[in-house]
Image 1 (cartoon, rainbow, N blue to C red):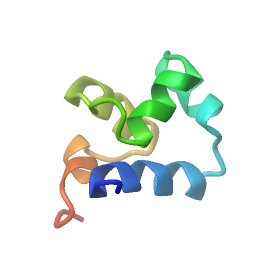
Image 2 (image 1 turned 120 degrees about the vertical axis):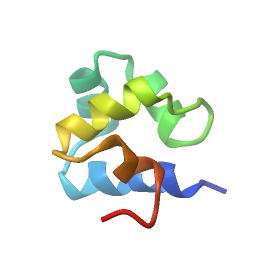
Image 3 (image 1 turned 90 degrees about the vertical axis):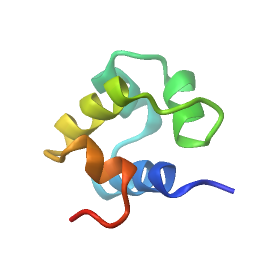
Length: 69
């Protein structure tokens, strides 16, 4: 079962009509590596969360914590 921070990644990606490949290219990683992050097969490190947050004009904490708006 996916945890909440990774469900957020999938939701953000799909809301912006992006594919795994699109996200991977934006983050400078392989599609497979990004897919593994989104599907709980790799840890989401803070450095990567910063890059993702920047793409969506969010703060990294918005990805890691449910109670922040």
